Length: 200
Image 1 (cartoon, helix red, strand yellow):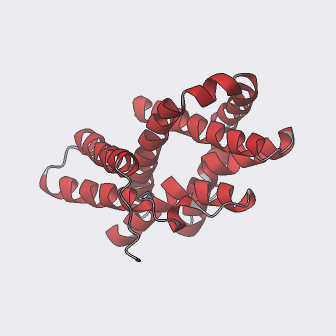
Image 2 (tube, one colour; image 1 turned 90 degrees about the vertical axis):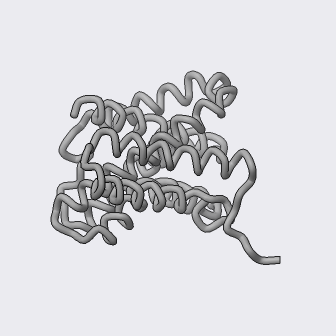
């Protein structure tokens, strides 16, 4: 579907910009920034494809993803002051991105004949592990290992999609609803500081 492909490219660009800004903040050079942008944008999907045996991985078969990441690098350097002013907008697109990547990763895993449980896991890997790799390379504790609700939103969104597909098999609607669930959980988790940290 063309609109899904377009959203996938947009999500890739947003994740890449996020990675490049992190690299700039940590005083990486332009090559280092490109690498961080790349792993942030496609790291999760790459890991998923390797784990499910889909090689060459997706971005290697479509150079538009590399072009989008290069554009993200240029935009991040050229408009960094303006982009950082719109962090709420970046959060919006990032959250939409993790919802989209969760469902696309889940569908791709189901498409190779793996079980729904594995598909849920791979959907979450698709959405969050680019950020994990970015954080590790830049010396930050990855977000999914902190108290903030992040991967949990993806898991709930993936489970919701599978349930909806069982009772109401309308893929586009179910994708939209499941992505909305990820967005709402993530939005309120940040706004109201929800967490899974039950320690005292």
